[in-house]
Length: 424
Image (cartoon, rainbow, N blue to C red):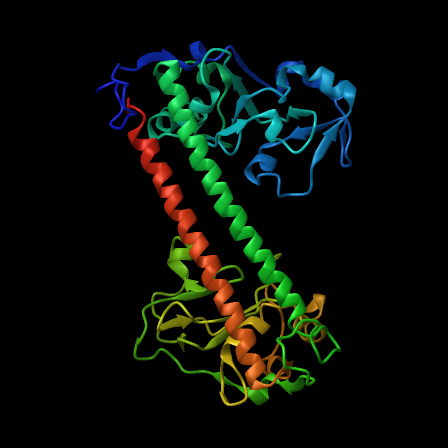
């Protein structure tokens, strides 16, 4: 197989050189290189509050430091762990658990002043080759396939430094390394920029959800469209909606659905990578586009379950464990408004009141159909409902558009990872 990539920058024609990874990096080390477990335990103390240095873990890198449960070490530990000081440019490879992930580290990009690498990862650094180039090279399919060959197949996935050093890689000239490294850095910066935009839009949506619906025991929101001043009116859900018990007896739909707090009503196969519903969907509910369902399963993201509207499919089959309903009076109730009302937490108090902690069983809230429809919904005028619903629908479209752009950019990156590195 050729030692040249399929796609190259103009002016580069030479074949790449085959070398073992250990020959390309002067530093290949990890947390335990500091000494025995006994000496590490003696010299390294962990702190939950900011201290002299941050202990960088793979979970921090994976979350891009958006998590908050950071770990810190004091100055003595920082000096003791000098071999894995992250203030200089390097590459981090998790070698226990998340094997195959690759992180480029530059001290100026880290959120804390002093940083050291935590356990379960290997740090590699070159003084002569381009680390930025290799941070992309190590993500390409050829290297990942070779890495899989040294990962332990039994128990927890892991590999060690000695085996890592023996993997054969392709190395171009330093000038070509720099050109390729800069390209992927630019792509990553664009992808991160799009991610930041999407995060900001989600924060804006969350802010509006808080401000444009009244707080508990209040009848007007803090933020309103101009021209609306009336108090909102309380209604029981059963006054504006009707339960759906229609069965899928004629197999009008062969699409089994589940409710995700993040993705809404979604195809089970897309969500679980398999169908968890019975193969016979005749006894399932038949839910049609624009209708709602309540999933009594609770989670960290949905403390009292989730209510979602079917938007992405014409119809689908849903377990009879769910409570399904539709809006009955469209002259007084806007479906979009109700959809986003259930994205707030205002309705949680009712579920909490009728479903105590002790009544929870196997991840399901113990709430009857009658209790669910007794829930108090607070409604604005139909005109205000429509404006609020349209605003959030527009925000969702913008967020989805940003997500689509990000997906395309990631696909472009994957294409270049495949084409700009020789395949061994």
